[in-house]
Length: 382
Image (cartoon, rainbow, N blue to C red; front, side, top):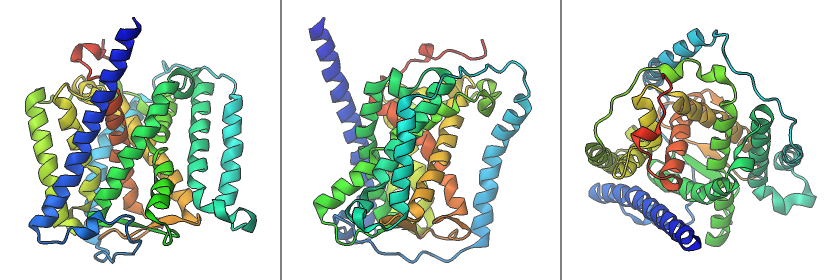
């Protein structure tokens, strides 16, 4: 029995490593190929740590601003309309209302202390102020898990601690891929880290990067305890999708071409940074079986897609808020829409957190879950 369990763990680890390697290989090689085809030197894209400098993006464009805003509203309107119409149903289940756990209160105290240190310049903690982002988000993860437990009696921290721990490792790897893509589009840059060497920079960056997936997925689980947020989305429009092999080839091919083009036309295609990884993950997972999210949308269940998108937006708000007055922080230089900032992020930039939240769920499933079969997904309409 122990032998079979050990073999299962080994196979799980090997599958996860293969998937991570395949994803990162295409994320790295395709943009480099695009830069090479465009005659750009590859050295700046491979420099570590990167030079923290502001890149002057194309000026603000009302046409692009309204085009993006209108397209986003067209996509979101059917979901919002469905939720508003269905939220009046009297059959919504009530939450469990458990006591808020002690470790949740501990997280809240840690969050307040880290927040005070992050936004002030106390000499007695000067050496720690560069590292406040990690304790802020570890505290957030504790608090959001505590909120989930108090409403449902369940949460990742109590029910799936091993999965939650693995999310931290996968998350660090996950966000480093976006740091590499940003070398090409240069939409954000860091200040307050100019004297960091490679080792210090890697440690400083990896620690907060590791909190991204646990925060987003923990937030999505908490939002799930509010049924009205997804009212009617369990019986929404089914989305028929091509068979696995065709989907895999098409998605991987489209994502690869898009990543090459991203390096050639970064000022025009920068928004693809948040969309192409979704297509790539869908393609890679479809080589062995469709992602769970796709199987759910095929039968008209859009609840998890919506919750992940909103969770990305919620976390995005806190990322930007806590970043605003921190000693070491990031700033933006986004083509055509750099205006109406909330904290440092332009207003339309927050739209990127919606697909990012969906990607977080897809990526966690891709690396840490076995490929589901269609028969494993229960039809919510029955």
